[in-house]
Length: 288
Image 1 (cartoon, one colour):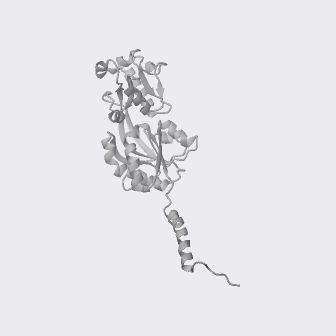
Image 2 (spheres, rainbow, N blue to C red):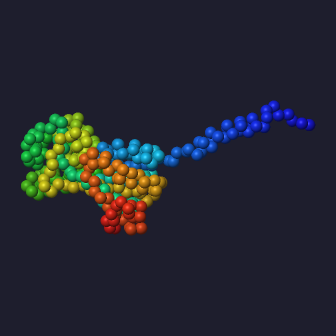
Image 3 (cartoon, rainbow, N blue to C red):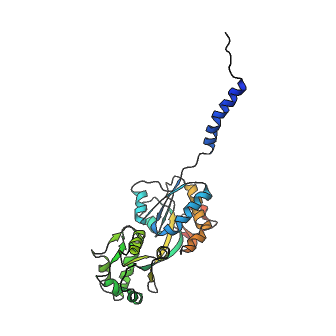
């Protein structure tokens, strides 16, 4: 018994090719999984522009989350969240609060703490000359970042202690008082200052510049901030994360400077065996 073909074999082969070609094309063009970046709110002005650029140059999607440095670290150390790259405003946190999930840090920029002035702040001319007595006034609305979460909060308390030792008695108690709202990060403080909900708060200079917030520079020995990044030991895509770091700090250098950041020559702290990926463009600073 013979079976008759209604269509020539050539047509059948063409039909099969037409079916298989989209499947082959889809498999060949499948996009790599996205990179996950956690970064402190202070970096928002630069990374808002740089991360989309990095997506284009690396050909890879990037998802990001921002917040206080302490909260970001807890997402990795306590909540078990995947993270490919983390940028925080105090590199020491990687060791002191990283729960052994980080083996190195790369310091790359500096900033300074300033006294930010709200849109409705009173006594601004007085504060320019001598800010401590103005902040001691209970009618002045202060705000601060939570020192348990944000390095800016730690630096603010350190600054008022220094000023209190110079004669401004009661300044730390005032800043820690029940009438002073405590927020998670500098981004929230900036928003409340601009809205007129707060009169004064300690912020980073770069945050004030980019948010168009008036600020008062502190005494000759300001509270400096050294910014750093790291890749967790269990990062899902460590090699791609290294490429992202290079993109952000080399190709993106001009953006950082435009946004007011003071870039440093990158300096790597960690075991020398981990330094190789950064050797050609970062100095070795020593052990982690």
